[in-house]
Length: 246
Image (tube, rainbow, N blue to C red; front, top):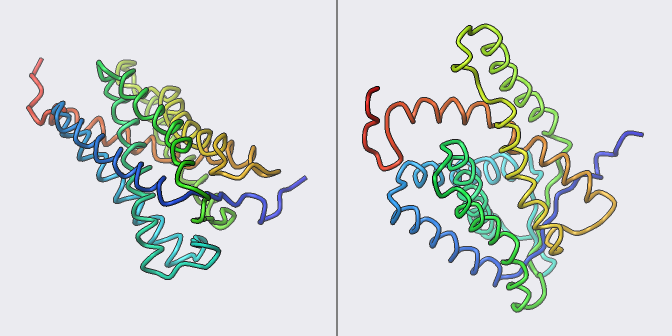
């Protein structure tokens, strides 16, 4: 049985305290990356936040009109929508891209970084309940673009598969399974955190939204992110120093 176009409608409900707490954490995370001299990871994470905002506000809201935000049950104007989406984009863009980059570089402190990021996703909604009812709601329909996103995912991984089948040196092949694991797990982790705390409403479409978003939404960019990572890592270390020539 095919799902109707209204079924997969990712929704988030939260309050102002959630935004404040999460904003403080993002500043803390950026400051920690700076303190640890992980400059490339820092810049990459900020780029992720900007990219998410361009897509979410520029495409989903302004162009496709699939993103809607309400405050106290009243649809927000463009300015308020932009501010909420700016926070959302920086929040998930920065944490997702930091998660991915640190995994790709197999950072020596990876377990601590992942515990920090995923742990925050899990505890922040619980703390935010002290701020009262969730008066801010955001939702978007996905039928308009999931097909396009799936095509991008297929094209990206197909490029890597063809490359790996052609290249004779096995050491130059791409870690395709690892890329899938990273791309799926980062999206699944925060989708799961949203769901268990009620930020994502639990309904008949919850499981489908969790699975489809996890398989596609972040994972589609992993082949291209990997190519960027390979290029950058040949030029600079995370502290911006030049790699030693072997």
